[in-house]
Length: 252
Image (tube, rainbow, N blue to C red; front, side, top):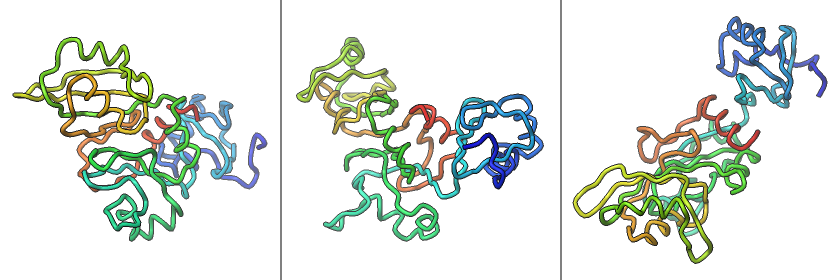
């Protein structure tokens, strides 16, 4: 792409339409050298860009410009399958969006980024951005996934150390990025596990291996995108900051 797209849209207008700032504030961002287009800092006000093709960063975070790309967070409830359809008629993620015609008209085909097993609840991302989705799922990018688990038994002092150093499972060694005790209850404990792995049932298998079978498991974050107080079964669009954080996590 050339330095400027003659038929494009002025950069400050693009930033304003993306919800980054008012046009005047966007001009100040550009003048301060805080905006880059296709990897180059832009300071001139007349710069035009093609929102469909330009890669724009503000303060190092990529800004989503295309209005046909959709990024959603779902709080998947227990019992729901992480599939877009199910030939046995079981409740699945696709059931939540099959009647959202305005969403489907905008996005076309949506897909889920990774999976949560039927008995696991919490944050599941949905998008039609194939490149971002692929990278978020690929183990080489080591995107952090945070889980809170209610487990059987009291947590011994050595459990966190064992998990951080690595535990041998039947399909190879796994170690957690971090582990902490959240709460201790009679006969059970609440723990937080942060892991880069995406192997099937890996958190459940890890905790079972160290003697603490999981009774309830919730994924609370993917990278910097957090579940917060979002209700089970509800969808919400990601904001620009969240989308930018996911791009950054996978080097886009």
